[in-house]
Length: 435
Ligand SMILES: [Zn+2]
Picture 1 (tube, rainbow, N blue to C red):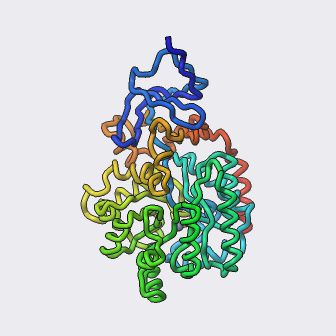
Picture 2 (picture 1 turned 180 degrees about the vertical axis):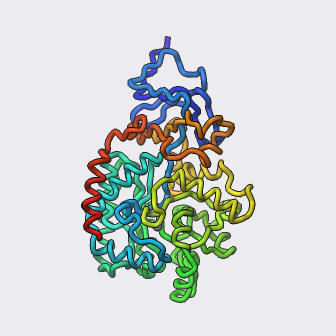
Picture 3 (picture 1 turned 60 degrees about the vertical axis):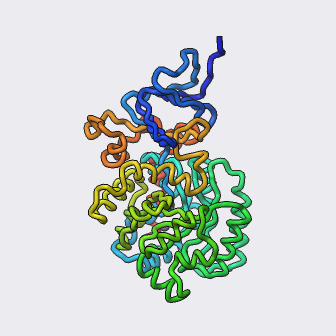
C-alpha cells in the first residue's frame, strides 16, 4: 500500500476557479499545499483517502480563486488619500510632489505601506506593483510580512536629483533585492515627461544588465501627449520606442491617449498595458481603448494606481469599473467579457511581469497565493455563473481567507499578521503632520 501523502495544508470543497490554460472550474475538489507551493489540485472524489494534512480549510459554500494581482500602484499614497481632489493630472501631481518631497521619509512610507497591505489583503490582492519614494522601506516591509511585491528603483527628474547619486542608489537597490523571497525586481521610470534621454538610456542598460521588466506611466492624458510631442517631436509611445524600451518585458500604465498606429506598435512589440480606469476617471484623463487593445492582442492587466487618485486599493471594485466602463464607452455589451476581466486581474498581471510560471492561476507547481471568497451571501445567491458574480456582485467584504506563499494572512475575515488598530493609530499621527 502506498504511504500516506503528507501536506502542510489542504483546502477542501467549494468551487475552484483555476484560471489555468483550460480555465477549468472544479466543484468540490481539493487543493493540496506543501511549503509555499500548490502540490496537487484534485477533482471531486480524487483525493486519496490516506492523505494527511497539518491543517485543513473547509471551503464548502465558497469560491477559491488565484490571488489577485494589482499591476500598478503607489501604495504608500494611503497617506495622501483624499488630500488632493478635483484637479487635472499635471496640477494634481504638482501638489502631491510638493508634499511628497518635503514630508516623506522611510518611516512614514513604511507606515503608509503597512496600511496598504492590510487593505489589499482584505480585498483579495496577494501581489502588488509599487512605484514610490523610499522604495526600500516598502520592499523590506513586504519581505518582513510576506506580501508579494513587484518593485525596484524609480528613475525620475522629479525634485531635480543628482544624476550619479540616483543611478548609484538604483544599482544598490537592485543588488540588494536580487535574492529577496517575496520581492520581484523591476526597473522603473516615472514617465517620459519627467525623465531625460540620458536617464532613459540608463534605464535601458539596467533592464538589459539585470534582465528585469521595465515599467512606466505612458500617455495618461492629452496634456502629457502634447507636452512630450512639443519637447521631443514624438508621442510618449514613440519616444519609448526610440529608447528601445518597447517589448514583452515592458509594462505601460494607463495608455489612455493612443493613436491607432500606437495600438499596432504595442501589439507588434508585445508591450504590456496596465489599465487603471478609476484613476483615469477621477483625474479626468479619459477612457482607455481597452477593447481595441484586446482585439489587437495586447496583454492587458489592471491596477488601482495610487490610493490618492482612486481613492482605494480595492481591485475587485476596479475590475467591475473596467468591465462596465468599456461596455458603456463602446455602447457594446459584448466587449470586455467577465472572463477577460478576470484574466486582467490574475494571469495577465503575472504574464506582464514575467511571473506566469509562478503566479496568476491555481496549478500544481505554482506558488500558493490563494483567495477564498464566501459565496453564502444573499447578493451571491443563486450562482448561475461564477465569473459574473466575481466581476459584478462580489465585494471585498466577501473575501474570507487569503494565503500568500502558502501562509495564511487572513483567516475567516481576521488578519493574522497585521494589527490594524496599531497601524491606523500610527497613520493618524502622520496624517496630522501633513495638514
Ligand atoms: Zn501611477
